[in-house]
Structure formats: C-alpha cells, structure tokens
Amino acid sequence: MKIWSKRKLSTKKAREVKAFLMEELRPHTWKEEATPEEEAKAVDTLRRILRYLREIPPGPRTIPIPEMNRYQMDYLLPLMATEKKLRQGEYRNACNELMDLVYFYPVLRPGIWRNLIGLLEEYVEG
Image (cartoon, rainbow, N blue to C red; front, top):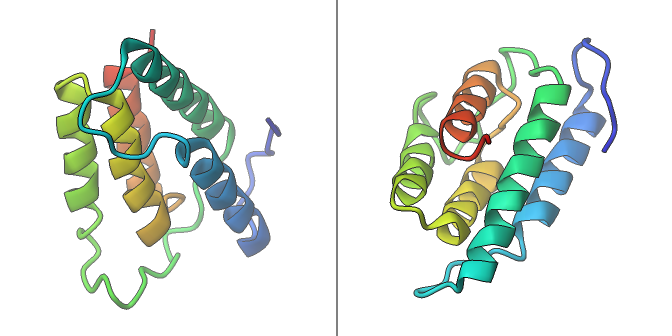
C-alpha cells in the first residue's frame, strides 16, 4: 500500500485508487451461499480497503458524478445495499455491492469517501 500525502489527489491517482479497490473486490463476486472461509477472506479485504481509504485524502468536492447518475445522492442506493449485506453478515456479497459503488461513482468525493469509511468502521473494524 502506498501512503499518500494530505493534498488533493490528481486524476491519475484517483484512477489508481479506483483500480486498486476494484482489484481487491473482484475476487469476491456475488454468491448465494458463501463458505465461512470465503466470508473471512471478504472481511479481510474490507479491512484492507478501510485502512487504504484512511491513508488517502478525499478528492475535491467538484469531482463530477457520471452523467448516467443524475443526482448527487444516487450513490446512496449502492451504499445502502452494501450496508444491508454487512448488517446481514454477508461480507462476500457486501464486497460485490461495494464494487458497484466503486465502479459507478467517484468514491473519493468527500461525502462518498466519509460515508464509506463510516460504514466500514461500523461493520468490519476490529
């Protein structure tokens, strides 16, 4: 993991962050019944992501939301789906929902970044 300075991230570094998150989440695709070992690996992945997000600063507030997502609060839908899976203890499926959030929304936007860190702290920190 790379430690970032507390300055604004460039577009290139934002893409690197997105690529890192997608690479971490990719092995944990949705599955009806996951084994305890798979769930444990998913929890470890979520903890790694939490540590990584804490090390980097959020991006500027002006990161554009993709055109297909018209409203600034649209990111709450995949975030709430992730929270639901975490609450149910389905960590592997939570990773899959989180992958949707990372793929479609700029997770370094300050509001998304803060909400994501808060969600992971509540359910996987330990």
